[in-house]
Structure formats: C-alpha cells, structure tokens
Image 1 (cartoon, rainbow, N blue to C red):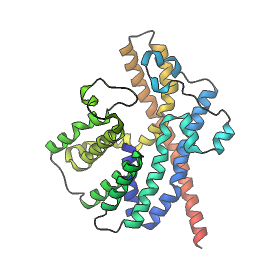
Image 2 (image 1 turned 120 degrees about the vertical axis):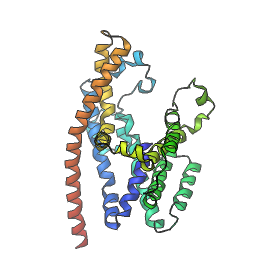
Image 3 (image 1 turned 180 degrees about the horizontal axis):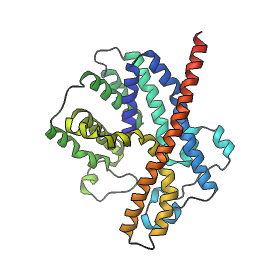
Image 4 (image 1 turned 90 degrees about the horizontal axis):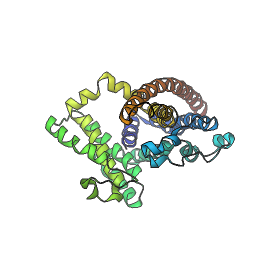
Length: 310
C-alpha cells in the first residue's frame, strides 16, 4: 500500500513539472516497470530450472501456508519473454502483482491531472473517482488516488506542520491497521471486531497515516531524512523486486542448514541478519544494472521524440 500511495504521490509531482515531463513519464512507465518484471522473472525461472529453490523444505517449520504449491506454470522461456509480463511475472514472483496497479494507477492519475489538474479544489474530482473505484471493487487504485490527493495537499501546504503529540497519536494505529492479517483468522480481539472484507482498506489507512506523519510531523520528517533511511529508500524498489527471489532460495537454504544446529529463534535471527545483508548487496548491484538500462531508455526516448517532432 505504501508503494501504491507513493505511485499516486509521485505521479502528481511529475505532472506538476510540466507537460514534457508527464509525457515522458507516461511514455516510459510501462517499459521501466517491465525491466523490473523481466529481470525478476528470468532470475526466478533460472532458480526453478536449476533446482535452487528450497522453500518447500521450510513450510513445515514456518507454517508459511501462502507459498505452498508455488511453482511457475510455464517452463518455456520463449513464451515467458513474449507473453503478458503483468500476468506471467506474477506466476514466478508473487510480489509482482502490484506492478499492474502501479502502472494503471499512474495512468489514472495522469488522466485526472490532465483533465482536472487546474481546478483550485483539485482534490474533489479524484475523491469522486476514488469513491467510484470503492463501489467497483478494486481497492488498490484507491490507494494511488489517495497518494495523488495527498501530493496535491502537500504541494499547497508544505509548510504546515503538526505537533509531536499529534504525530504520535496518528502513528499509534499504524502497526495495528497495517498488521491486520490476511488469509488467516486472527485471535486478537481488536482484529476480530473489524469486518474482514475491508482488510485492504485497513492496510491503506495505516500506510496513508504513516506517510502523512512523515510529511507533516517535523521530528519524524527529520528522522526519515536521515542518510540511513534515504539510502534504504534509494534501493527500496530493487529490494522489493528481488526479496521474494532471495527468500525462496538463499534464505530458505540457510534456514534448512541452521535449524538442525540451533534453536528455532537463533536460527531465525541468524537467517534474518544474513538475509538483510545479502538483500542489500543484491539491491545495490541490481540498481546499477537497472539505472544503466533506464539511462538507455531515456536516451532512446529523446531520440525518438526528436524524430517524431522534426
């Protein structure tokens, strides 16, 4: 939900830079997301192809029901390359389901900006569109629109700040809302009194509050502008793209080896520390590759744009 809200937020800011920026953003959005999907999908295909996936061995220890039976539905690499990446990539990496909503959420926000961006009360129209999506059922587009509205508000009220007491008060429900469980029934009484069918909206509300406090509560904002968090943010998409791959392979392999030598808690701690370290190393290397491809896409776009406008 954080990624989806930031999608709408970032799209609004890109559109604010001018027509040229929004056109370039819209033109390259699919291809830049496709690069992430392609790299992750090919990597996972290779893991399955060479039998380097170890998560089936840890299901009994961890009770991770959601990955039982996980297996790519297509072993033909040619079909993988020429198929619908939004659909096929999800089969190889469960976490890539968000790419569909990130792409179309960006398109929706660009359309909203181009049609109604000049309105003084620019939050009214996207709010109405958000309500329409609530009625229609796909809640993930609502998160993108929330990000758009938040960016519009932030642009107009960047200097407005809330006190630390308000900030803490708004942060308190964040872990509760974001932690509402999916696929399993929680025994926590506060979760049991909330209707389960609105779980996506609880996660959305928690993510929205977290981002709002980071923007408008000065102490939290300063903490999030710390070099450590800025660095983590810089590599966040690379981490997101590859973390499932590492969990299925390296992390699972380590757990299989350590669970027979250490207690469960010690094994988990050691695996967690190593996974965080290797994930960050992989993210740094992956970002270098992705950035070089993005620079090539940017140069190609500029050449094509000049060719079409000559």
